[in-house]
Length: 229
Image 1 (cartoon, helix red, strand yellow):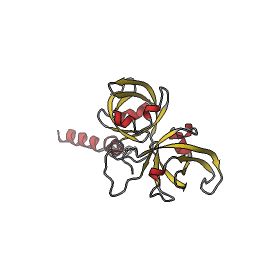
Image 2 (tube, one colour):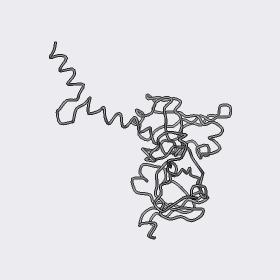
Image 3 (cartoon, rainbow, N blue to C red):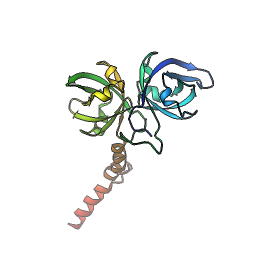
Image 4 (cartoon, rainbow, N blue to C red):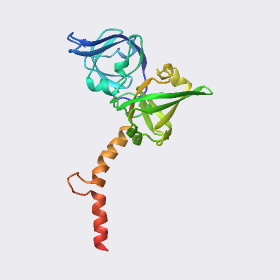
């Protein structure tokens, strides 16, 4: 579990698409450098969010650490597009004593979004995003939480008809995350607020039924009402 409050910005120093070393596991691996800040209490097997993606540390030293990327991670996130020298947002998993400043973030990226506009206003920046899958807009609400490349942010606007949403970055956030370095057309990782997904998961069978011809709770209420009439 994470908070979406980015602790540090690291740099990609190595990418191996078929890492046959013991720490690579025969898959895609990425090594992040300039990461001393998040490695002071690190252990093999710890979770560190890289651009909002919860990944497992398989090797580390004083200033860098390696993680493996599963095929599902490559499909869902922008991590497969990373290049050596790219900057990434880093956050360690929460501990029992941390101040919870963002929102409940799982580090499970749902999909990517594309930056479609960047507009300055005073010392802040507006960003407009278009989702790779517009169906996820149902989980995004005005003034609700969203995680973008691991950064907990507040949604400003949602346009269901045109399938976009916006956020605004204040000056402090601009100085501590990677989003301001991106350009129109770049992809970012999106994790929607998990509470919306849980509510949908609970309510859908109550309304629609079990999918085997058995109606849901709402249908039963209507039938009971009509029967009483």
